[in-house]
Amino acid sequence: MASPVWHPYAHLLTQTAAPKVIGGEGPRFTLEGGETLLDATCSWWCMIHGYGHPRLVAAIKEQADSLCHVMLGGLTHEPADRLARELVRVTPPGLEHVFFSDSGSVGMEVAMKMAVQYHYLQGKPEKYRMLSLMKAYHGDTSGCMAVCDPEEGMHSLFSGFLPRHHFAPTPSAAHDAAPNEVEADLAALRAVLEQHHGEIAALLMEPLLQAAGGLNMTSPHYLAGARALCDEFDVLLVFDEIATGFGRTGKLFAADHADVTPDIMVLSKGLTGGYLGHAATLATDRVHAAFIGDTPLHAFMHGPTFMGNPLACRVALESLAVFEEENYLEKIDGLNRVLREELLEDASLRQHPQVSDARVLGATAVIEVADTGALKGVADFARKQGVWLRPFGRWLYTMPAYITPQEDMARIARVMKAWFK
Ligand SMILES: *Cc1c(COP(=O)(O)O)cnc(C)c1O
Figure 1 (cartoon, rainbow, N blue to C red):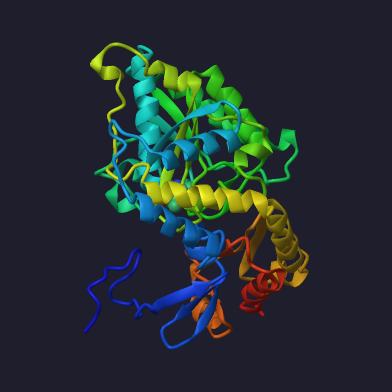
Figure 2: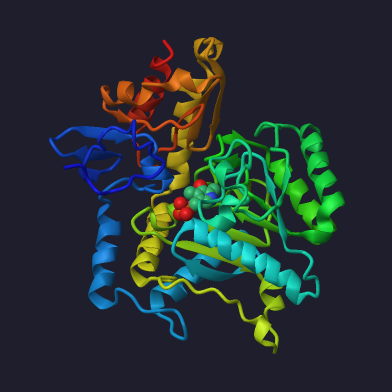
């Protein structure tokens, strides 16, 4: 009998049976029957330490022995307090307050509600719309769908159901662009702000790397320019670092490339090393201070049941400790060198008629094709060579676990290239 499990993003008529995973170690997972696959995308980019990491597994077991769950409504516990302190320590200076939730999408919902309520409490209730970027992806819940790319994004059929927000063009300057090369992108952002700032609460962006919207990469100068524009127009800057956070772009946070502190920052995916679902929405003193007041409307009315779950907080603390103690930024740099060498220095790949671009940033690489048909069959092709690739749209990409040995990184890149040979 077919499984009653309804799989995400799956076309029910054409889907093939999902392989059953029974375990995993390091960058590989194992299927029922013994096949072992090198995971090129580490389970939607969250399993940054790979599978079965002994320290992360032990942390969860140890925490389970003392406290699995208690609500944060009116109560607190050591793992939540410690994790909040650690996140304040490692994130850009000025982010001082931490609101926990249970998934990336909810973390973004929290950010948007916080931004709207901030302006309300500042006496500007008319600032309740968001400004997002084309090619953005911020999650699958209703509030998040409304700030995803409304054309190329995956939610266009819901457009009638969703509130209307504003969109600026996707930044087109490359990651290594000179300051003058981002001027056009910033002028486009300014144009939207000039016209609509009176109703805009926040500018949302996935800094440096728009992930699920097509792995578009841009320059740190764009982040700095966006920060200045937000200050000029009294708009909060929200960094969705759910994908970019915890090393993906080569620094701990994408914001670190530009020395920019957003007003609100959202973390999830790598936060727990992928071992449990959790998210954190961080805010500056300025945002937090607006909520200190004596009317009922000053309370922030949000509280996911599982916010600050002790198991999730405890494994997040262990994940961060391993990241720092084992110098993951160096590992990421090593993976970056392999990806550049294999995918950027190979002229034949870029000259292939189906390949429109190849890009690398931190531990992320993508080969973009002109037509989605050009990637049909690539997942099966890779699996025969022991690699699990899951392309989407026009993008064949890798975002591996950081513990992936360099030989395995090269192997992934070579399988990606071989498809075009
Ligand atoms: C994955 C992702 C989300 C959504 O997170 P979920 O945990 O899947 O709800 C939001 N924003 C970005 C940038 C993401 O990559």
